[in-house]
Amino acid sequence: MSSLRITGGRRLFGEIRVQGAKNSALPILAASILSGGETVITNCPELSDVHAALDILRTLGCRAEFEGDTVTVDSSSMTGFEIPDALMRRMRSSVIFLGAILARCGQVTLSMPGGCELGPRPIDLHLAAMERLGASVARQGGNLICRAPKLKGARVDLSFPSVGATENAMLAAAGAQGVTLITNAAREPEILDLGEYLKALGVRVSGAGTSTVTVEGGRFRPFVRHRVIPDRIAAATYISAAAAAGGNIVLRGVEPEHLTAVADVFREMGVGLTCRPDALLVSAGGPLRPPRTVTTRPYPGFPTDAQPTLMAACLGCEGASVFVETIFENRYRHVPELARMGADIRVDGRVAIVRGGRPLHGAVVEAPDLRGGAALAVAALAAEGTSEILETGHILRGYEHITENLTALGAQVWEETERKDERWSTKGEGKGVPAARSSM
Image (cartoon, rainbow, N blue to C red):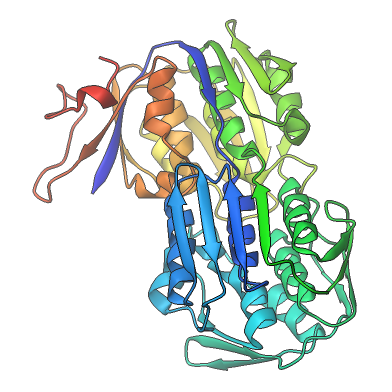
């Protein structure tokens, strides 16, 4: 089991380039099977979730190669329509293959998806969208079997603006005959990015990134090249890190417009954010002020994925910060781990009250999920002493080269591989620390 060790108390300085968006790359990888041709995706982040998606593509019979930040997928040899349970369990986002495989093959078999346990995230909206487009849905044991020899355009009214359901509806509609109208659609930038890919593929798409999306299926082009948008959640995490540790950093390759809700909160806290062409300058020097109540909402509201790391940064505020989580009921699983570091956080249902201004200390903690693990890393940067974060596989699902990036900013951080009969403590130095991974 790997762990991440961070010695806090160092201000951050320097610049890094923000990775491509994980939540954009995954649905585009799924969409790559639609045409039966070749897709080249650039600015694709090297993440365990992305590798899981590539393994799914290979299992289906596609050729998928990853070199640098470029993924090449050739789906001309695709023969399969079933995703094995082992691959479905590796990431919850694997359900995004539902609409694409159905559109390409007329049938798909998959099990319930895995991923972070953030509370009920039923895929009923996904299945209802497939049924509206003419598919039949059956459950056999732990598997879902969808069949649709011929998908037909229809009106798909989503009861909640689910990102995944919107994407699956768009992917299935791309292979359907006629026009599909998706209402109450998710408005996230990643939806717009998927729409741009589909248009490059030859699909007529309008309204992507708004609450009403229209998709008209058509003939696909045999070759598409697409660049993934920057990862706004990764950018928000590094802003949180600078706010918690203090310092001045530059984030290259960001899209400031995608960070409006996040930037508003940090500016309210006293963090300086200056936009430059293809860069965001982050400055945090003085004491932090508690923001007004932070309520997570679908885009363009404050993103639930940025809530845990912002909460970690708010531990440095003089006063109380209030969070209201409206998306996932188990989004506060990082709170008990932050408490091990000295945090004072009270949770009542979907409300969390953070009493900041107390010193944090290093501790052995465990990443409960992807964003919760990132929150622990942010808190560790501000804590006195050394923290060890276990179960870092969660973090690697969403952050490319996080150790190298934090080290480049001056943080004292390195990775460890733990033996089964050992457990690193916060006392003393780790054994066998790779020099290239440490800023010591």
